[in-house]
Image (cartoon, rainbow, N blue to C red):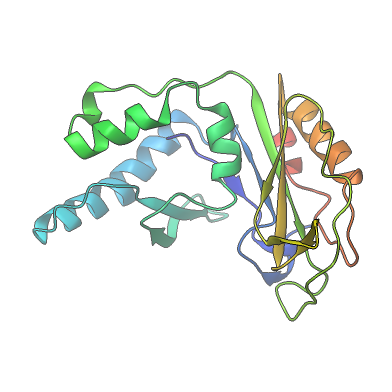
Length: 216
């Protein structure tokens, strides 16, 4: 899979408390082929080797959260046996290959014979969170503006539920608004334009998602 950059802190400029992720984008320009290879050699391959050495026949997703320090070192934050959230919200819209084929190859042990193909477009996801998140927050707030989104815009539901025929909030991270466009600047602009059309009481989101990507 391709690298995706998440934005973990709750506030603009990477300020505030840590969250599950306030938005992300791909491609990530500063992740060069050499840096990608470094991550594989130093983190991913040793992890896979260690799993194999335990005798566990693991076949599935291994998601690595990695931080790049100011000195260029790679530090592992976490591993998960699932796709990342919200990283997958920009990963899958850019995937040209059939995901089922990739998963079947994983099960069959033939993944080395499959090459994942990617769309050239850029993708940006902006998370709409409940007011107060990642601390305490209210739920049950009606959400408006979910209908009639333009082509290239996908709204992923996270902390929502149906109540009396309406969609209301039911979690901290409520929606992931993703835009796919020819370049990162356009995808970012389209994502934020879609965000402005969605509202609920206490709505909170970062306004600098993918800004780093534009300067990479």
